[in-house]
Image (cartoon, rainbow, N blue to C red):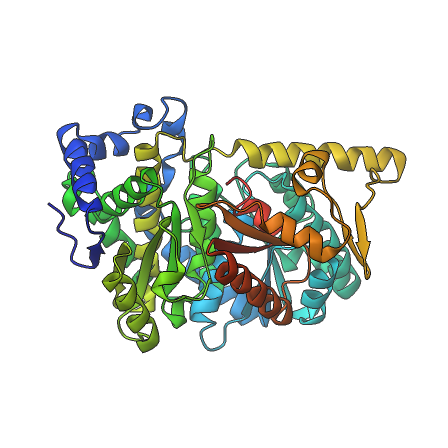
Length: 493
């Protein structure tokens, strides 16, 4: 039986399958084996190497005073802004914290840059005074191209602004021995925070990658982490699977995915609206392997219940002290119509610390249910390697490979590979191309809009209108991502 007090499952006939999985986890002591690092829960490869996140909270509680002292140092030095330069796991949690909590009085404003689109980089640069800005370069490996490009650009700009004091305006968060650590030491960064190699980037919210930025905006780290500690204990190795919030959620997501309900539509109370950005990466990059995957649907406005196919599960993360009445009404309609719904209740925004751990555990469990390795990222690495090859070729020849558009229509260029062109048939215009392209949609497909443009409010609004038009016309799930950040979020999926 399931006994989770802050989570309600309305999943109908799927409940029998979930209880079967939970019984199996109890009989075979799978929760205890997970905490022991038993890789056979997944694929039997190196999963046991990547479970450092299980122990992150107690380790970080021992560093609270040090982090708080560093935050006060930065505040008292007079910095008005903090610019975090990172991608994916190094940037999404800080973004959620900034959007949810803002900055405590007297603490600097946190800006998170995770796009190399020139317009966005320039917009961020022009929004701050570099003389009063601290730059955080966050990169676990220290070799990710985008943070390295950010670092090089803002290092040059900072030198123009403050001369030989540039190093005092920079902080690095990286794994020990990385190329970024060496560069930071050579250039006398104000501080270098060394991460834990056994914690993968997307599981790093409750590590230094999430908590250094949190300290800089004056977040009450002890309260935040103590709530996370409570959730860690509720998910502990000796807790029965049916009473374990992470195991139950993971079992639900994995079981429903096996039945074709692999589109996880995230609904969050307005105050915590950006939580979906972090969940999107955690879920998509962890579970998108070998033709299998959970597709997180973030920031897609809710439609009427009959507007959805049978590939959805809805997860409503409801802030009890600031609920949205319209969301409550819409979720109630979805349940009445028979759609599977999971409701998670948070007592305050500070519960995000606990929620980070719940979802990390759930993602690991869902990976086990689906029989995949949730901690690797072979296609993300493949993309990084391809990018490195491409940039080296550019450095040698001075130009990128040329591609010719198949159609130019009123200033818009359309590119496609030969296989796609053969599927589209005879097309002569943008309208023909889009109609043919969307005409290929089948039940259970989804449409991903991947925009390599400035992630401005105007662009977000326009593309949100576009995705909803597609959703309503074709009754398929949609995702919206901005490049290159989406490559480090949904790219693996």
